[in-house]
Image (tube, helix red, strand yellow):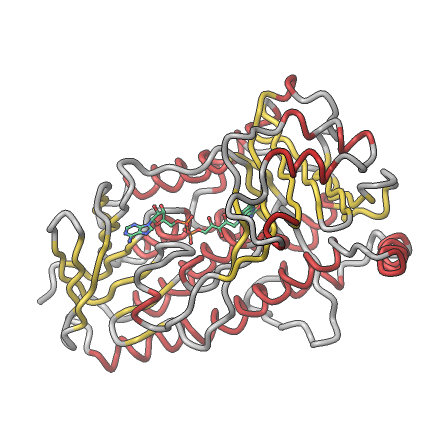
Length: 410
Ligand SMILES: Cc1cc2nc3c(=O)[nH]c(=O)nc-3n(C[C@H](O)[C@H](O)[C@H](O)COP(=O)(O)OP(=O)(O)OC[C@H]3O[C@@H](n4cnc5c(N)ncnc54)[C@H](O)[C@@H]3O)c2cc1C
């Protein structure tokens, strides 16, 4: 009989979240993280009500609340003119969807998940374990790490992010570069010369660019994400999306946007990738979650949230399998339930995130006029554009093909 029930490759938000949710349902879990410590990049994260509701259910919301803020508005502005076009009333959204819209530092969420995992006797955590291969032997699965360690389990879950090793067991695809790059980071709030209200998540949309701003760590830090389409990338340059290009790209924007750019850190930048949705995340005793399963552009601010939703969707059917051993047939049926709940929905979020970015980044005169007019004329109490995403999962409704995308931002 295998030593472990579930082995999770990757201890990011998705992997640790799934470990906690599985262990809370009585499943024994081992997490293998390649980094020497569990950790996250020094930037912010938005969590919409579809995600905070879940964190509440698993006892993590109370841990992050003291370090989070619940802004009142998600405001959209034209980055060139500075005009405010519309906003989503986030206090209203809380009433409507049963959970707050929170902004926080990524490491604060990761730490809360790690503490919750450490408190679960059914979870074994390892750092410094880079998963390099798996062998599905039919009655169990063997996971190999490049330090020589091997573990045997009933199921291995690839929660190993955009460049997933485990995904390659299922599908032969590559991350797709969008040609956009992000500069981001959270700095002391007093270091930002020009910032939006601390009560807002602000989105400034411009030609081939956007800037997002919001406070984190209970208002002590200010998070900014500046994203732009790189001409250097289009020109085929090796070193593209440079700090010089950042400055050039934002030079023509309004004073509020220009003033934010100098406080962005220049020492790291994130080229933006996604992949196309795939029809299955499972092969035998291997399954995927989070960015390994559905890497998406960040424009709906849902990647981490969707990875947490994967975790709870996996925990339900797996917990029904009991102590084990898990027969291949029973496991396949449990994973079918997981996939039915998640694959199509997450794929839709992936596709909609791309389109949402395209709407923000329009760069010709007529499209910009039309976009701004649509945003301006929107009733601020109209939630039909986010209902499909934020409503509880027991009322799952995918958007129709004519429904434009909307939601959070990042
Ligand atoms: C600019 C930007 C802004 C964003 N904003 C938001 C937002 O506001 N809200 C939101 O919900 N999402 C947001 N996202 C998306 C979010 O960051 C990701 O979707 C989320 O981090 C995915 O979590 P994950 O655990 O699946 O993957 P990852 O965070 O990539 O974690 C994978 C983990 O696996 C480990 N690993 C990798 N390979 C191996 C291996 N072979 N063996 C062992 N360990 C391995 C890695 O070290 C890492 O710890 C944003 C993304 C970007 C780029």
